[in-house]
Amino acid sequence: MAELKEFKLPDVGEGLTEADIVAWHVKPGDQVEDGQIVVEIETAKAVVELPSPWDGTVARLLAEPGQTVDVGVPIIAIEVAGAGPETTDSPERVAVPAPATAESPAEAPQRQAVLVGYGVKASSTTRRPRRAAPQPAEPMAPSGRTLAKPPVRKLAKDLGISLAGLTGSGPDGSITRDDVQRAAATDTPLRSGYSEGNGVRTATLVPGGEERIPVRGVRKHMAAAMVSSAFTAPHVTEFLQVDVTETMAALRRVRELPEFAGLRVSPLLFVARALLIAVARHPLVNSSWDAAAEEIVVKHYVNLGIAVAAERGLIVPNIKNAGALPLPELARRLHELAETGRAGKATPADLAGGTITITNVGVFGVDAGTPILTPGETAILAFGQVKDTPWVVDGQLAVRQACTLSLSFDHRIVDGELGSAVLRDIGSMLTDPVRMLAWS
Image (tube, rainbow, N blue to C red; front, side, top):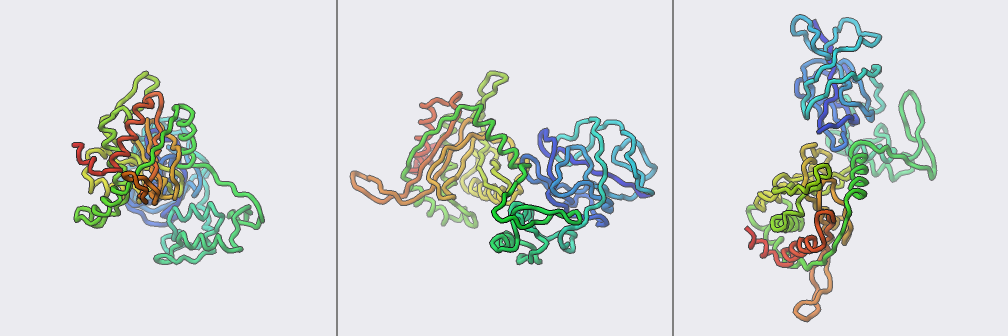
């Protein structure tokens, strides 16, 4: 006898209570296998892919793209082959022969086995009314959905562009960022205002209108975290202009070494190494403030965070135990972290546990800034753009490559003397990278 099992939204992070449905990879009638990715969700920390826990046939999708769903609420129903006499100890099993038209009685609260995280706490969560399978609003690819990656879908949504009217120029006809941006530059796709027709939201002409972007997921978490950090930790920011001519020369030499073959090596690598050495010399800068215990927690390991401007907002994935990595491995991890972060593939584990952060504002052509601390951390270093600058060398005016470093720190933990010492150490190592070899 066939059974209908409902997969409930798991807690994929540490104590998360809800997530947004980004995109379904399946539709009713599709065959799925245990472990096959069926849906992408966006939590307050990252976009996460969820696999099916069973082999079977998709019966219904119980949540729509863009919908916010509480942890523990069913999101998909899958018909699976019966595995023997029906039992009543699982809240996921429902007899299949005739779909119910009314909600079943409340079931005994019970902990649900989940794929990631710490599980769903037993509660008296009520089941939301089931919806009929949504009608497709866009031409469907053979897989049942328009071929476009989640960041492209997000861009189209933000610009008010309907994917239905676009012809993809990517592999297998997939829609790319360029396709969406070209459409946004024309007069036909309009970005403001929506009308309802046959249950489908479509853009309508509103010249000079307004656009409203829902604050959800990563952006919502980022906004709350920045407000909390700015108004709970007393920030101080110091600046230092540094001659990095020798570092840039060393960077060119490093790129030619066989150990760095195939790696994209940037000045950020040397900035990261200098910060890691400065932390080893001044451990208090790599700490956190425990208000409840009235203690300063000094971390004798460095999970180095790198601020990444992703499609869904600012995220700060980190490299675990970065201080123990040799330079080639640190370069590799920096590249991988940036790529996964920009692609929206950073996992909750990548984003958790950071101890100190670098933000590279130089890639945006910016000289300096006053960065806000990542919540729970004591310091953040901003690295400005490297550019030709008039500089006095041995009493003579010369053109040198220089940049500005900005260090923000929590003044409850780090005073001006310590903050200045850390910034001065980083600057001296970038002025003369041979100094990095002196620390072992």
